[in-house]
Length: 464
Image 1 (cartoon, rainbow, N blue to C red):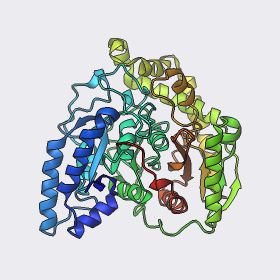
Image 2: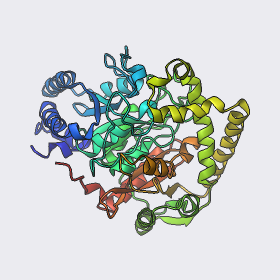
Image 3: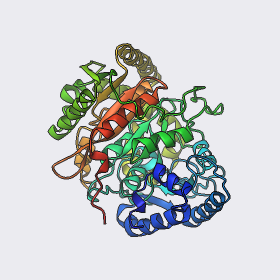
Image 4: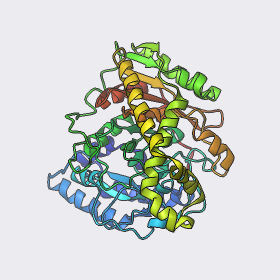
C-alpha cells in the first residue's frame, strides 16, 4: 500500500479491473502523500479533496456494477490553474484573478471527466503562465522534488512537481514557449506539447493565441499516450482547433525505431546556445540509444535557436499585451514583478514587428517541413542546463531562456521532453523528440523505444 503513489494510470486501471485495488484506496494513498509532501513542494494551489473522494466513491460503485466510463476511470488528475474546473477558482497564480470562479469546465476537463478521471485540484503555475518562479504572489512557487532548493521548471510547475513526486499520476499543463516540456525536463518526467490544434484550448486562460498548446505530463510514455487520447479532438468553438482524424496515440508504442530516420539538430546545443557538458553528454547518448535500437541518425540543420526565440518573443509579447493591457494599465501593482517585466515589452511592439515575426514564422515552418521530407522524427536538446536554485534569481534568469523548446511552439509541430540522465548534483537532464504534424503517435513511439532502452524512467526523486 505504501507504494500505490508510484502506480501509473495504466497500472491503476488494470488493478481496478481485476478488483485488486479500488479508486478510493488509490485516492486515500495519494491524499496521504499530498498531506505529507506538498507543504514543502507547493504543487497545489487548491486541493479539492472532498469532491475527489466523492468522485472516487462513485467510480468504485460503477466498477462494482460493471460500468466503466472510459480509459481513465477512477484515475486522479491534477489541473494547471489556468484551466477552468467548474466551481473552483481559476487564479492563474495571480492576485488579479484570485476570486475568479469558473462557471464551466474547460473542454479538456470535460473530456477527462468523460474518460472517467477524477479531478484532484488546481496546480501551481508561473503567474499567467509567464512570470517565472516568484515569491511576491498570493501562493508560493512549486519546488523540485529532486531537490526542493531548485525550481521544477515552468510554467506548468505544479504539474511537473506533483507528477514527479507521486502526488498524482497524470496532470495537464500548457505550453506557449516550452511550459509543458520545461517541467518535464526539470523534474525528469514525460511532457508532450501536442500538434497545434490537436487539443482544445477553450476554457484555458490564453497567453498567445498563435503559440498556446495544452498537453499531458506523466511519468511514463504509455500514460502520456493514454492522457492524450482522452483530451485530443476537434472543438469547433476553438478557432485554433484542427479537424484532425489523429487518434489512438499509443498504437505504435511497441514497434521500436528500426528503420526510422532521425534528424539530430546538434547545432541547437553545440553552437546556438552551448549546453552544459552534462546536458550535451545526455543528448548525445540518447541519439546513440536510438541508433543502437536500429534507427538511422544523421545531423540536420534548422534555423538558429536565437532566431526562433526572437520570433516567439515578438508574437508572444504582442498577443499577451493585447490580453493584459487593461489590467496592466489599471492594476499594475497586482502583478508579480517578473510577470509584469515579461509582459510590458508588448506595449512597445508595433504592427510591423508583429507582421514581420508572423511572416518569418511561416518561413520557419517551411524549413522544418522540408526537414521532415528526409526524416521521420527529430532529436535535440530541451534544457541546456540543469534546473537552477529557486532563490537564485540571476541564475534562473540566465538559464531559463537557454532551451530548444520554443522552435516547436513557433512551428506547431509535436514535441516531447523526457528524462535522459542525472547531473552530478542529482538533478534531471533531458532530451526532446519532435515529429510531423498530427504524427504525435510516432513521437510517442520513439520516446517509448528510448524509455525501454534506458533505466531513467525507473529513477525516483529522493522525497520522503
